[in-house]
Image (cartoon, rainbow, N blue to C red; front, top):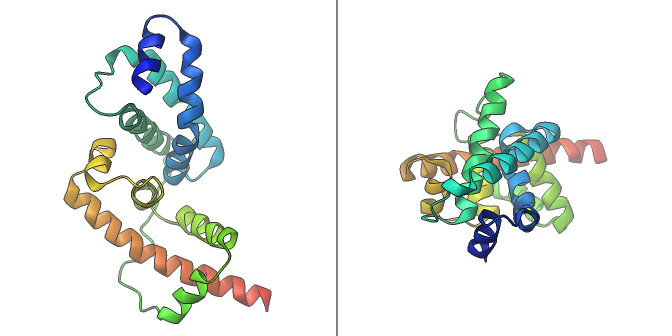
Length: 185
């Protein structure tokens, strides 16, 4: 379907680009927010990314999926914004934490809305690369090969980042959950 939209846009029907925006804006925002950690910067990234995609659409060769090509633009623009604003993120965990399975089970037993809240809070506290890798792999359900195409990272780098990200996520979720339980009681 994207190919049809792209052909129509390239032939001058620029209104069709709205269809691509509607289709990809949510995932683009998700990717951008996972890197920049700020909703205003994420919105700026999305606007820039759609402008770049529109202006460079004629250079899209169709070798990869449009989504892969577009998400790569979003990722590149996200890291440019971080660099421009000199935002630095430090990895949260240096060693593998010892977390009881009881704490994780408590988190898993939460309502779906509460789970989403805690996961989003944890993703905000993670490094941009780890948060991005988790979103692409678990939320967008991309394979390691697809993530390679989107990010330009090697498969081994992605696997290492995912391993660290899962470890950090577990640690962060446990600590957030502990803090919230103290506030509630």
